[in-house]
Image (tube, rainbow, N blue to C red; front, side, top):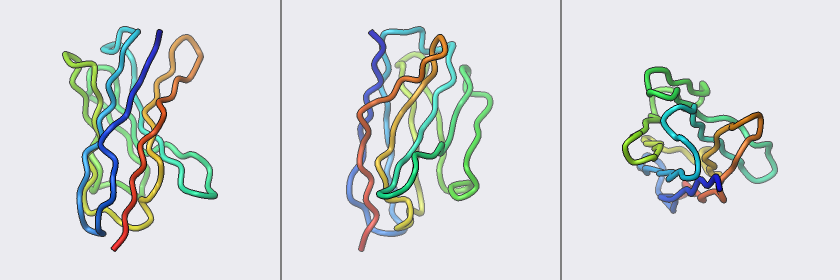
Length: 116
């Protein structure tokens, strides 16, 4: 079955960095766009970044441009989110996601907390 499993979250001080990983299985990873979403307490889930199947096209929300980088390793069925210069407002649960056959699949999420 389709699975996406996030890891790499944690507590970091403002200005720090984290790298999230998402390991995928159960589908042909290399042909699908992959996405990172986040949901902060009391807010709606929002798309943070996505990456095309071969990695040639990436998109970011304005608030993370220049600080976050999405990448993928199709040989390892893994997508990454490198987060630098983290801000308190980046605190959220981060989710890996993909859409297959019209259905969106989600991981369980990984908590990122930015606090001094």
